[in-house]
Length: 347
View 1 (tube, rainbow, N blue to C red):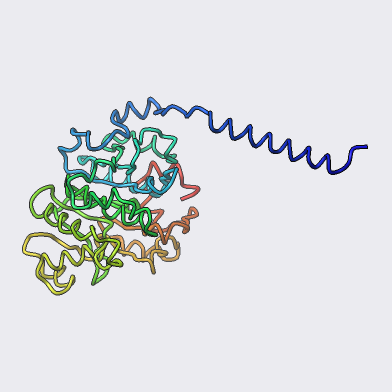
View 2: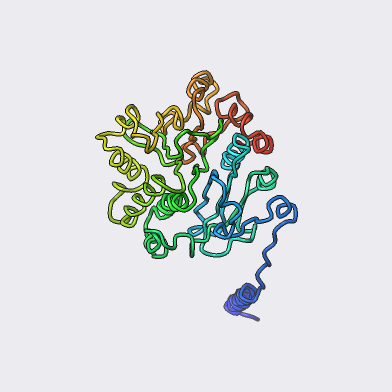
C-alpha cells in the first residue's frame, strides 16, 4: 500500500516540473515582431517614428500632446477622454498640425505597447500625427539633459509628473508652438496675437496644462530660464516646479509683484496671461458640475467664454456622463464627435 507521504511528494515533483517547463518556455519564447497595421501607416506614414527626425513637421507651429508614462509603465494607455482631447484640438485647428508624442527611452514602434482603442479613429484626421519622443537624444544640449538621463526622476515618488512638466518645456524650447495636457478639450481655434501665453488657474497661480511659446526670441528665453530652475527639481519641494515655477518666472519677467498684476496690467508685450475663464473655468472642487445634469445651465455659463476646458482628469476620471444631458456630454458631442460616438456608453 502506497503511503500518503508518497502522493504528497509526487504532487510536489509534478508541480516543480511544470514550473520549470513554464520558465523555459517563457525564457526561450521569441519576442513578437513589431507590427503596425497598414491602415495606420497609410494615414500617417511616419507613425511612431522619432520626432527629432520628423523634419517636415518641424516647419510648423504645432499643437502638442505628450504621453510620458512609458518610462514608468509597461503598457501606455490612452483613454477615450484623452482621445477626445486630441480630436477636439484637431477639429478646432484644421490648419495646425496636432502632434501626439509618446516619450520613451526605447524605440516606440510597436502598437502592442499602447492600449489605445481610438487610434484608428484619430489617425484618419489629416492633421493628427503620432510620433516617438526619444528620451535618449531629445534633451541633448538643454539645461535638463543630465536630469533626464539620471536616476533621480525614477527614484522620485512624483517622477512621472516631473518628467511631464520638464518635457513640455523642452519641447517648446526647441520647436515652439502650443502644448496641451491630454485632459484639455479644445472648443475654439487656438489663435493668439501673442505667441507667448498662459492661463491663470487661480488669482495667484498659472496653470501648466495650456502653454504657448514662440520658437525663438522671448519664448525660447523664457523656456530656458524655467529649465535652468528645473535642474534642481529634487531639492525644491514644488516651490520652483510646475505651475509654481511658471508663475514665479512670469512675475519676475514682467517685473510685477503678483500674478494678478500681470493679468490686469499686462507684461509689456512679452507674454499674455489669460483669466481663469479662458482655460480653467473649473477646478478640483467644482469640476463635478460638468457631470451633473441638474447643473447643465451652470456648466454652459462657465464654458460659454472658454477657449478650452481643462477637465482635471485626475479628479474627474471616475465621474461618468451616463447618457444624461450634462456639460461634458455637450462638449464631447460637439467637439470630439467621432470618439464620443464610439464610446458614448462609457464616457
